[in-house]
Image (spheres, one colour):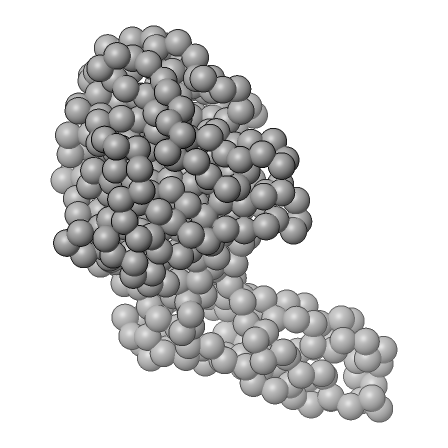
Length: 407
């Protein structure tokens, strides 16, 4: 079972006090920690969303103190948590209990104490976010992934030292077992996939293929554009791709009709930004967010989402508001789980998803660097979302784990 880490970062405590390293207290005790000085992955709007991974310990951490002064850290944890090591160090190990609560920290040395900072923690138990047995194939990321017929699938991907793969794997959510299927005709280090009427459509870089399981592949030519799509989804019997524009242009939405094996660019899907995202729920296509100057440090972000009816290629309802520079969506049975660079959200559209303007509810706010595994495979099966592998740290380390999330 892979180890999962939870990191806290607290700004430097001694600041610019030159005598701190030598216990020269003439300048006073260590400086205060910023009131918002506790950071980490899975910070929620009301506090943290810590993860209780079975019996795996969680590692906490704080930043360094300038100089070599001995410092003790005084931690408190939610009820039921158990310290396994390093209780007064900068990096204690704990096992989270099942109760939510508050985590606090304070540093002290011979010069005095810092203030105490705290943040509420909501513990997600294994009923919500679970570790599953590792993927049995070679570790990889940036693979194509999709759900079909009650199973999840992983196709190709980029591995260690630049290796790319052609293998195809099927995941059984009832047994958590993986079965290797016949290889794909190509390999890719940038894959996407969507399904229509029992057939999977897979992007291998710029090549487009149809897959009838377990292993019948049919080439469908090249994509109608050369840049890598900003999203791929299916709705109303069509496959949709987002084509990012160059600076100053507007993104294009391409629609593939499996009955004629042709691409079209309906004008009804016109967008205002260089890049947009999309997902489907029921028979509706949702387009939105988007950004200009997306690859810069100061992108201009959109927030509006609109529902479209693919049969008429026109807006069919009032949208909701959500910004994103990175975006991923899992359509579950009765809701959509969305992960952006700002956090994880749940959108409950109700009986008529194209007519409801309710904004998504934030589940956890997540710092950009800790959005989770990057380039992972993901698919939704019933009312559970699954993430497979991906980049787990910086510098990149491929994480072989499999996670299931049930809201």
